[in-house]
Length: 349
Image 1 (cartoon, one colour):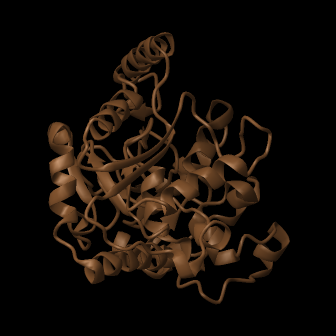
Image 2 (cartoon, rainbow, N blue to C red; image 1 turned 180 degrees about the vertical axis):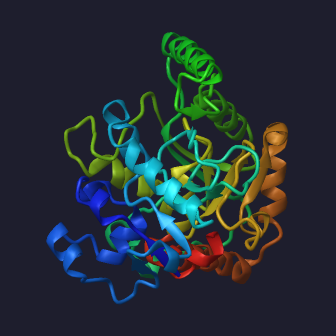
């Protein structure tokens, strides 16, 4: 697969803003190495400076880069889209933020993690890339869990905020949603009700049941992996992955965007997601039957979530339960690592 990249535009930006496709292709090298032509031997793409030879035109930087500083770099994106249109090609855009960006090019293909509704000719669901947790937090000999009659369900993270903060979030959501509808905001599908409301409802329903064991660590604020109460930068991440590895299932509910970072962490740990579907699109949904691999819960089924989990759990014996965990880990390794996605890039395009 061959991509056209405008190297003159590339020289303006910092390497940290490179999209994952190019970071993999160039192994995250510095600019001098990039312009000397050194590439990753595992990369399956080719770059060309002749758009007529290319299958696609590629924006080299994250979409957010073109929106910074009153869109001072936006002309580069416009030029790439116009060039692609001139040769009847698509321009490929990468966005890794929460919401759905308004990309004003009819010939754009936008990779993003959180689609609302269905994939379209323009929007393609892609994974978010995480470090392999088994290298730091998992011991291979103990990575998979045996089947037992009562499933153990884990969750560690931000579950609810106070009423004042929730009210502020609603007001902010209404404001941004209005600005978006009037054309004064660069993103669509702005949430109004905080995702923690749904998350709290799900966790409460599970805690109320005596038919499942819950292993919940609920935090009252968002805690990025670099922030801890104790000052130890690894403490909360260790607690998070101890919780994941110490559970059969993990509750995965959307965050501010309509996607779950925890979903990919759960797959990487070989654990089974309890996936709350909020009109989401998971990557490769046309080729992966996600309802086979997850406890798939529609928003309308939350009151029956325990019954759905028990139905799913009881369909396995010891051998099948471990095989499912192995398969989930394999899906992450082969499809949702950066190298895995690059090996299957044609499936996304």
